[in-house]
Length: 154
Image (cartoon, rainbow, N blue to C red; front, side):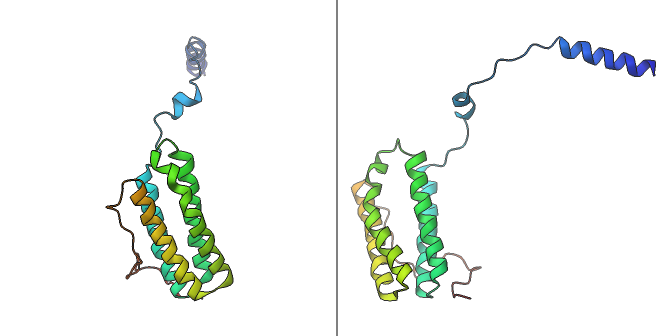
């Protein structure tokens, strides 16, 4: 018991002797945290773009709507986290294509979906050209991007 009291006393004295550190400002704390680059975001959009196509082809409108939501969320994240990139100034050119395909999905209109998807794809390529990334050409996918997902509706 005396040993326990002795150890507690030492710990108490040691703890009281510690100097408190000044809190680090939040910008300093987050300065070295991971921030996705524009390329990571674009890769995500490319995956959702492909999945969107196969969902629309299968008339899985719930999945198509989900994939459009993912694309829209990623575009919003680009505007938030990569606002310093000059390419981001051109990103709003995709809004009419997004609206068109969202409307086609809402109406479950397969023909309009196909036309809107082509508009979306062409708009991606036009943006790449406008931002000097014309070497990055997007196309309508011919094979599913993943083999472990069913695109047919349940």
